Length: 187
Image (cartoon, rainbow, N blue to C red; front, side, top):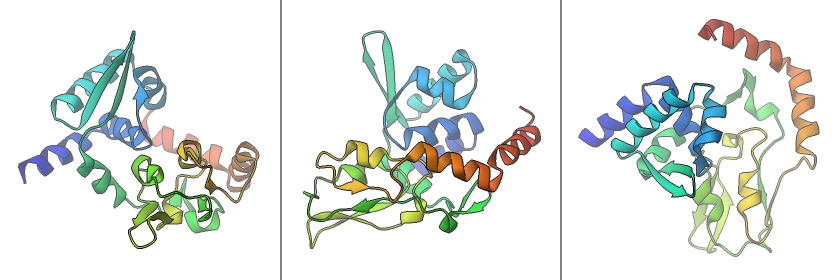
């Protein structure tokens, strides 16, 4: 129970939660984390050190760069229960963005289940292959599962990701929604 309390305390800070949210998609270097969190390098470093000391993250050094990833699998499970039903206020089911697995190409390596922190996939022990369990948990625009798939078995209905996302931004007035959110947060 103490370990779960520690995880919830860590995720109770907005900066730490954003860091962990980014790392759900896999390991990232500090420079990527700083860009995503939009905080100073020193603030991010302090929060990364806290998360590492709590056992939530682990670090790996490669030359001058330090890479972080989630160390405690329970963090992914906790965040998998998060509500992904909306994307910038738009009902997620209105957006045609989700992975599709070509069963003929899938070898059952499980990479998709391992790298996706949004509980989109599950491993089916009967078939020995991964399946799409919660398609609308997929982050709009994220296609990391298809990038990591060694057999190119995962695809998305939209072929041109950038064009598709730009059309959604226009259609749903996402820029205005983001600005309003930032104003409320005082950024």
